[in-house]
Image (cartoon, rainbow over all chains, first blue to last red; front, side):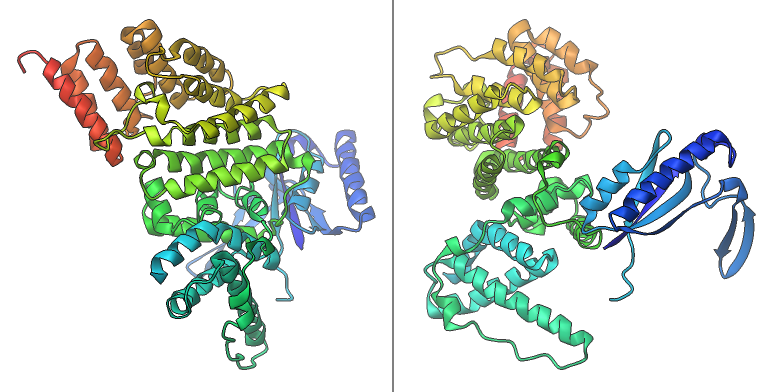
Length: 117
Length: 414
């Protein structure tokens, strides 16, 4: 099965892009992704730029409207995700526990729709 | 005759058969449906052909065949080929007479039902449904929720298990601290439901037996987990007292008034062994203290011996360090009343958050008793009425009504 590990963290902890602190965090993710790849379970993923760069398209009653900012304003923001291959939920949860986090935050583990059925 | 025998067989073996099917086919819904179909077949076949020598093996073998049929139908439906005709149970199905051929997969099923990824309010219900074979209606009644609500909770939980890819496995030791906690908490809730039911005379008495079996399976698998051993001990202590929980009128008999001569000694002996094994691991925990409270009571030889209230109070004090919740404090207050008097106990009870207890019958019953003992009869009657208004089980109602009557007698000129 494939699972998405969706990361919610306080994006302020990452600081500005390409500062030494940011590069240190990026290196942690590279190492984690490297371990996933080495175990042959990495299927995809991406890190997202800060929510200040987000634009949301809202659709209500057939009408679309644009909004500056993320879908939901909260203490923690969606910052990125990994897609991994795992035999079952517990295996995916084990990877989620190992995922580098900068402070308090959450990793949501969601199975991915299998396009073959 | 077929009907009642079938009900008995379904209740007694359902958990084991469904667990074995679920382990084999990795599909809870399929397992449940196949078992239900096997029961339907049994309802037709048994009255006609006579009951099988081994109902469990019969049900398992037929359900397995039904499950394969269903899988085949599912498979062909997607390939748009007509269904093959259903196969009647073969002679072989009817001949099987050895339930030992059914692998005991209940433990795996328990770990699935109690996975932390399953909503906590669904875990106990799912365990009772799949492992203990209770009907949705019975579980809904036990949890005081409408049946459709509970049914939906079960559907959602099963869907989560299937779609999230929860493995049908007993987890490895590295995961036990987290997973065993979830299993024990779930079984505790399930057992509490079994135990509060009409003091054991009611329809849930059957799954109390199931709890004895399940905890035995758990301790076999996890012989070094002290909390697991302690929970198995607790169930045995509590079950040992079952014959003494009702008096001749059908009213509940409080623990301190139960005649120890009626208690089942062999279960107490088993419980003591388990609790000693738990203590030997030198890793204390809340369930060991709870079992120790039961042990203190079950050590009483007869009614002439004074009740062990001081020991019980000391154990509750220790338990508070693990579980400082309102129910533990309420139980502790009952011991405080016996050791230090009702005034102090009432002060402690009134210190508890009464809004959280508004709909909790035992809270009002304990308050009523303390108020009555302090001569505050008017308030006592009010508290008894609140407890009675919350719809207690029949045995408890009889007991509360009797106590209320005694409080009325004590009310001067009212």
